[in-house]
Length: 70
Image 1 (spheres, rainbow, N blue to C red):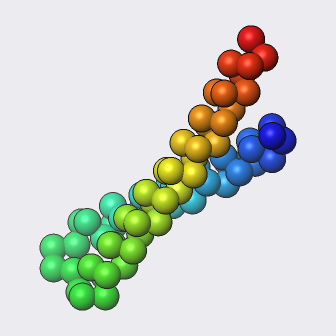
Image 2 (cartoon, helix red, strand yellow):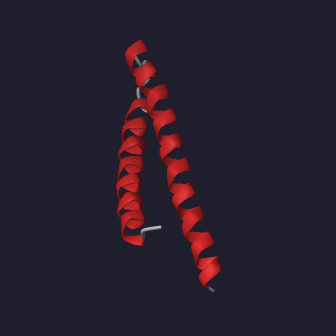
């Protein structure tokens, strides 16, 4: 595995995860969200979970590599 590439991906994914979280906070604060906003919220939650899974997969791969080297 390319550690530099993993770090770059982790940073990119973490940034995107934060952006989605910020948008979800805005949507959740709406008292009466429109149907479009409700759909957007559901879509963003799915994207956020997918990104979280990707981050965990990268971290798990790094953990396995450090276990072999140690």
